[in-house]
Image (cartoon, rainbow, N blue to C red; front, side, top):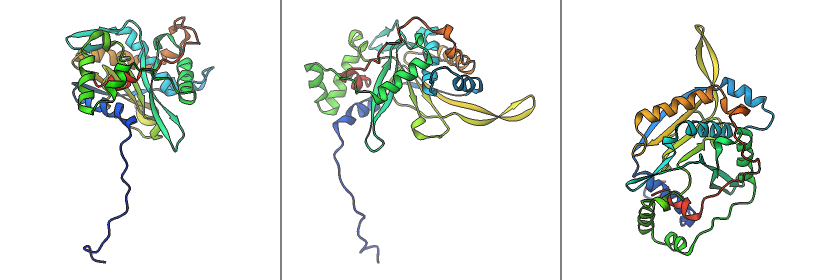
Length: 285
């Protein structure tokens, strides 16, 4: 059959759902940030052994969130958000993350928050993530003003969110300044990712795989964990970012977050906190 007579393949046109608006808002907002990326590969042989022998179930994401939270507690200067000409400095280490709800045929990503994560054990964090994934979805309460804002056309909505984000008291309600995202959904893929979420610090977790390493002059296989750390350069300079990365490296490679002594006294009944409907979209401020 000639090219002139070839019929185009079939296709279906679907409208982009409104549930994608918060994602698109965050992507647009992230393009306005001055991001600096650190790509690190950590030896997690000790952590892998400790996780296998842990009394409670500990996932790699739960372990990384616990480690990141403890690093933030050591370096509180990264636990801030820029709001116009001001900085909102948080006094509690909350970590934002995403979980996938629903079925494999109809998955849905939702943003959730692990409150005071530096005071929780990795097993507690893992349990909270599992509950957020399989439990009932959180109720995202929204005021009339927020509902009106979210119904605006995209350019007006994003301009309104940016204006609100410049107000410290409002920006403080947009959720944590630090986030962790996992690539485990891609199976055993290894590598780094350049995230676009507009947070002050975001840690993207790759898959643990055996990589060649040299020990005593001999090449051996060691489990390695790739992390991408992204910093908002408008808030965090290179030297503080480097110190944070080194602290996180030490915490991960020594598996310090799995020591009970690093925990605080927070109740095991601490519930997962879900951002409001505004905070899901307002991260583009």
